[in-house]
Length: 342
Image (cartoon, rainbow, N blue to C red; front, top):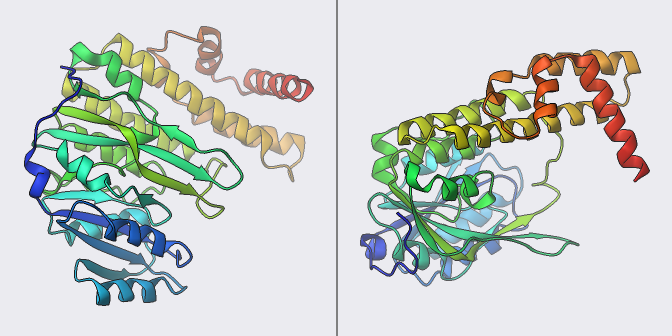
């Protein structure tokens, strides 16, 4: 069900919260992140920092916080990536609830307090986010305050959250540590993009409701080091893993119906278009024939089964299902020429 203005004091109010911060070479901004945790209005927290093999002064900063405040603990690991770091943070957590914070980012002073107030057994509290990037206006990702039950009667509200930063990020949320450990819900360590989304949807199987807090409790700071616009070589393989996790969640919750299939189809349509267009624009050092051969290989990676339920953009879906690289090449070429003229 959906409830507005939910105002019930919850069991997380006084529970210990473990804040997990994976970090790699962020000596220039780690102070801001850790200070925002230290300044939380919610008093009962600990912070576990996992240094992922930093080569700058990150570890020195970690040691300083550990020496000055017993609520901080720091662990050093070889450089194995953010998923391994987060998983090690989970294994060293003592709190009833877990909150993830990326080292580029920081929290509003009342973030943990607001999340704890609306968290209880079977309830995932989710705060809004504000994205800051130098030279650009802030981008706000928030939704109206509501409590969404994860079942088919409220599929429209669930669909409205698909593809949004607040849902897909593990940050600005409180996770039940026992649920994570009992069900072995760790971040996949074999992929390096989209692992957040896979973790979220695995966790959501064990959630009955999502409580949406309408305020930006979490500040995302985009820097040159955190930005990545090009599609990795295994981009579609990652998209398949993400969509499979969403489909598994929908089946588990009884949500796998026509509307959700259309949602998945549209998501895959966007991903396939981005992948092919990125391939067309990249590899500028190759000849036209070499670029076309690479493009044809990318077309072969498209799995039309994800498009079966797509009810919109029917002509576009039709051409993708044909998997004809020449036709798709000509479509993208025409689109590129038209965009440059506009």
